[in-house]
Amino acid sequence: MNAFRDDVTAFADDYVLGLMSPTETELFEALMAADPALAAHVARLRDQLLPLDLSAEALALPPGFADRLQAIIARTPQDGAPLPLSGDPTVAPVPANLPRAPRRWLAGLAASLVLGLALGFGGAMQRPAPAPQVVAVLLDDQGQPRAIIEDYGIETAQIRFVSDVEVPPGFAIQAWTLPSVEMGPRSLGVLDGPRAASLAGPDLPAPADAQLYEITLEPAGGSPTGRPTGPIIAKGLAAAQDI
Image (cartoon, rainbow, N blue to C red; front, side, top):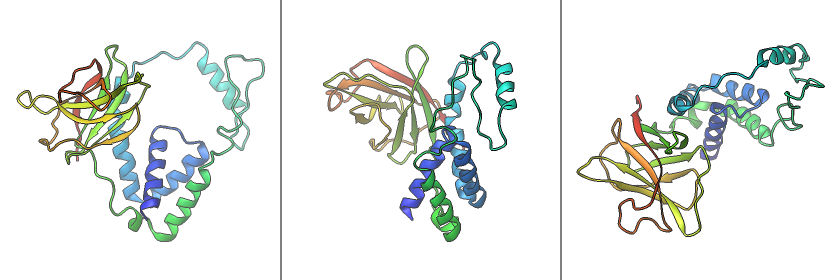
């Protein structure tokens, strides 16, 4: 059951980020319709990513976008597979593997749907993943999002990078938080590169709204002083989550 639940959770990430093809989306929405716990998990993921959405700068649509979109819709056959507009260099052809050809794990998603319907989702998802108490979007000095930290308040946090971070040889990324001025910055963990990871920090007070989080570049193995010593890669204030 744990493997099934992990697969469904991974699919939820792709669904919320808009990485699924139409066929995959339809299958996953069938999963959510049959399982309220999964639907609630997806809703939490969307709430957690809201700070990242709000940090993005609004951009104007390119000239002629509406006309090109209407032309694509007019040329879409009944099976939903869009055809590229010949002679229009601004419209890229659809790659062979997207979205008409499902990705390799589409079969796995379909298998999860069949397994879930056969077993009943209540048993597989009866213990939904805990929701973070705070979420912090870390921005660099140019205001660009670099990472997201979700703090669960149980000596565990998770970090996800949303853009690449260059780590020179002999250095590492270290995550920090500032529970209070009196306590000073506390390390949440050291990473050898920009990858999603669980951070097992020290026993700290429950995370609070507007608590500072940051990542710095430190020597391999982490700061030699127990305090940030290297340049700040990105930082941000936490937003409390309704849990």
